[in-house]
Length: 112
Image: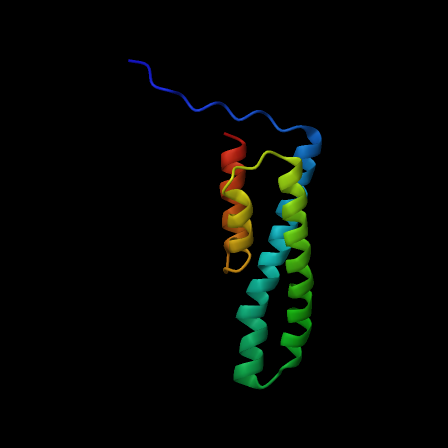
């Protein structure tokens, strides 16, 4: 008896690969800034009384978060992302290590 095979994922074009690479870079920057905020800046503020770190790292993280969401939306329109990808990318940006995990899962799905 024959079983239905999942259709192979079509190869990404050069433009789609470039969009995916930009998303990866923005995800790594946003994820790293979030980890710096949680792991270094906030302990400096609450344990050592140095609030300046949160001001600078927090501002950078906020800008990178907005840029990541914009790049995610643009990339979703350029490549054929699975239905789960856009909400998972947004949710991942709120979790520590989320953008790294999302990037891995998305590339695994897109590359077959």
